[in-house]
Image (cartoon, rainbow, N blue to C red):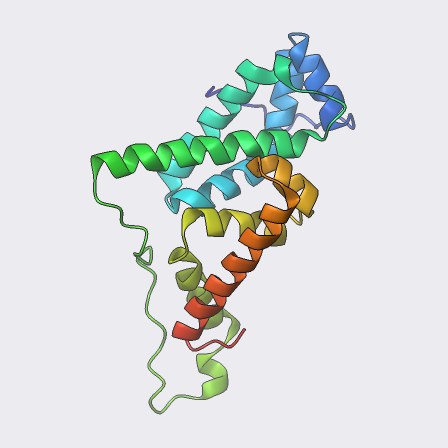
Length: 198
């Protein structure tokens, strides 16, 4: 659904659930409001899986299209965001499977980010400035499995609770806790490879 939403049209104060009800009743305008409200979060989640702008954009567009087609099945008594994010997760995983079938998996790459500065003769405080640390964290995150990046994104960036993450991923809360623990352990190992203690 590659609709262009008017950038200066204000998003109404209605809840996501109310907009979803209107969308299910056939209001394209209400669904466009949902898209505008969630497009950044959906793209960011897709990016955590794909690590590529074009692929993330495709996943985001496909996710919104699937949400539009399935909006009648949405239960407005439940939060909308986990329902939408579950669609994004499933779409992203399907997208990655398709890519893997076409070419060798390259998820261990570092997105062409520059290497950390050489520490010889440099000021340690400057070397580990916020920018260098951010690049190191990005490289460490890039080496995680897509599912690990996604669950960390949902918890840390989206600040979702365990229950909402469980709905998003379609698993039990206990599974969320164990997967999150494993993802944090994996990130700590990767950060250690970058020389960052976590």
